[in-house]
Image (cartoon, rainbow, N blue to C red; front, side):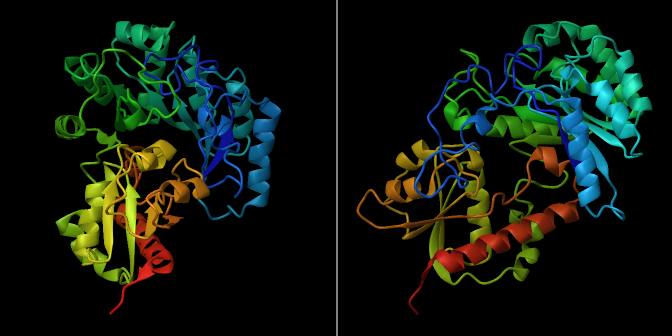
Length: 417
């Protein structure tokens, strides 16, 4: 179990400048997206405005960060838990000016620490890595992009590239390091990627997460900031999946990809695989009719599971033009074809659309439809999957699909016998 030590920070401002591929680069002021946290009669709340753009969360004072963790420790029943303090934020953790200070304070608790996502761009002297390790940091998630200094400097704006890479090597040799790279075609996806993996493996990194570069709205850029880089065509989903599988075969690293795939755990949607079909027998029977409106990636997997539980007469699965379900917006619903959508529609739990707006949009053909939200997640992404066992993944997915079926049965229309 991890206790979050949120140091805050704003992308771009608190990470020594945007990386060229950063999801938050070029973000414009947007109208409220809407989400499940909005009040019934109002579109917009902190979550779907400043929360999603991460433009107002300044670095927190060290006192507030330490006090928050102390409070969590006092209020929680952690006596028998395997605890870790996860130091993370909206900016780059290595750029937090009080990082050494809070790590020193946390060391008094005798609890190991995890440095959440950092690119190392804030490390001016690699000795900082030794210092943090000596105080209890034993896990680091490090965005490497490439171990080629020139590419890091060009694409990440890393002004101390030699020191940040030295720090990464020190972390790899002494900690559990989960490295990550956003993969850009023609930049760091060929020989450079193999060299980076070879270096990570020789240094002692435990895991490597490949992250598909997104450059268009339907790939996830919902903040009015597409394209991030003109002229760059991201990998297709099939190309990216094949790349993840190739790297997994070639290197002794725990390799996962996001938005897909995990070759070891078969995510996303491990329970859709034929070898795991027998686990579906524990799920409840579907007794009502509904449509599941979801993403392009998730739709074929969910459809296969629905067919495997023999519920295709009750439930159909329709994909909108968005790769990731939790980034579905009002615009995606407006562009959806309504001809095959049933009277009850389930959308992803974290979709960025107001509930009432969703019902209005999906009833625009004159058919009054009920829109409900499914679970927040039906599977796990590569960032989480790499830390789980196959059993953990199957359990997580089965619980999520049981929740989905219960929602279908509760909100859906009972089929006449």
